[in-house]
Amino acid sequence: MDNYKIKKDFPILKNNIAYLDSAATTQKPESVLRAIQKFYEENNANPHRGAYKLSINATRVYDEAREKVAHFINAENSNQIVFTRNATEALNLIAYSYGLNKIKKDDEILLSIMEHHSNLVPWQYVAKKTGAKLNYMYTNDEGKLTDEEIENKIKKGVKIVGITHVSNVLGTVNEVEKIIKKAHEVGAIVVLDASQSVPHMKVDVQKLNADFLVFSGHKMLSPLGIGVLYGKKELLEDMTPFLYGGDMIEYVYEQDTTFAEVPTKFEAGTQNVEGAVGLSAAIDYLNNIGMDKVESIEEELMQYAISELSKLDFITIYGPKDIKSKASVISFNVNGIHPHDVASVLDSCDVCIRSGNHCAQPLLRYMGIDSTCRASFYIYNTKEDVDKLIEALYKTRDMFSKWIKKG
Amino acid sequence: MDDLESIYTDIIMEQSISEHNKHKLEEMDKSEHGHNPSCGDDITLEIKFDGDKIKDLAFTGHGCAISQASTSIMIDLLKGKTKEEAKQLIDIFLKMIKREKVDEEELEKIEDARALQNISNMPAKVKCAELAW
Image (cartoon, rainbow over all chains, first blue to last red; front, side):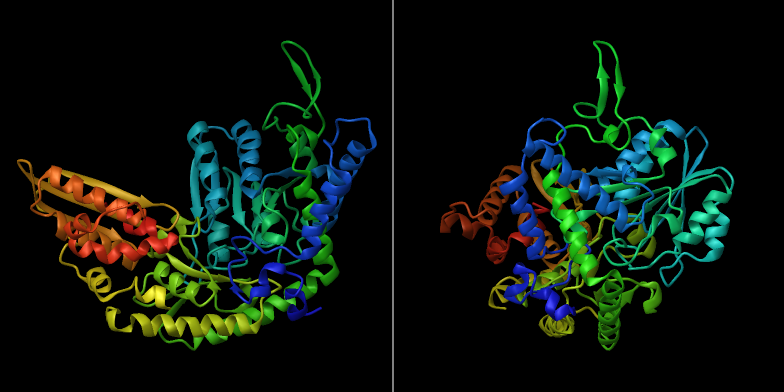
């Protein structure tokens, strides 16, 4: 399988657009779309509810999806996989059910400055509610966290470290193994936002020794509205429920309730079985290509994109330049032109990029910029997409050239 | 590209880089901060009244060419007008942007702001044009 062949599996890409916004959400292959349709045609019922065959089928496909996810990230057991709406909901679940209960006044919550708002705003809430301190690890000029910064900031008193595996703005691949090891030494647990890593590289929760790990299905070929929380068994079991209601209970009395076991304890109400089925089909699709191959396709594309973009003397590229510490995301600015205007011109050339602050306002403020253009890649992108981007950037420059402010 | 050229016109581009309305006022009666969190456009307007009239108006902040131009054009238009006149002009502008029916006579009243009329064809940019108004 190569990316040209892969691209043919994506109906939406048939009209030849250069879709370079996969860090926001990915397109879906036909097999995923078909799996969802098949679910509704053959297996749809409310899982865990009925004694009839259809309901049992719906329960089975939902449970199989959980097994598939567990296997994909090498979790010890599928009951450590909680389905959520997305990574944001998974992070809120951790903040509410773990953070608010375990964090005490004057404890420290430590985040990296490159966190997406989803792994930042919930922790601000926890800090304000509990009286804990909220601190940050800052990046160097290359957009990386240095060993020194990790060593200095992860110290006694830190109880939670929130870190993104891969920055959605800079593409920086953080050395999370090192961070997790250091955090455990000082008695902290680590909340790993793997939204930009699990879709793109082999992630092994046991090898990482991750305490919590979250990601969104829609960033890895699945439908919108399905996300994953992985947690260590003892942590999940010790947590209070997040949402209350049907299915997450054991016995309900007038004044009191006992709760179901993990993970059902965290899955109140009728779940998004369609999403789980789609995610399961997406994992099949990725496994069929092989995550090693996914990595090598993206690495080749990134190498080409960085080398071509570096030739443009009218743009500024942010973040690491070395391919080994950068994954699938490139942020840049066309000098003197606002990113939204760039994105509008690119759109007219059928090149889809993101412009703005990428839900990472503190990082951009720290970098001293208001917004960037961001091109992000996935397995269906080709060198021709990069060429279209480059051509459209020349057009942008030409169109605005007489208006670009010098100096 | 045709669509784009009807949006990024000379009037708009000149206004977007012109700094004549982009500063703080020495004296002001009111300031209003507008922000578009999804894209990061961020504009603060300052206003000084003389009785019922808008004596002075200026802005600071950042954003795309459209938001900058639209703000500057608005300031040129509203300076010296009464509050009531200003309200009417803003109303005409917003109707134009939202593609509601506005007659020619009314459109003439908003002068250079008519240059933003084609923005209504570009949904992604409508909120940039509206931010200051």
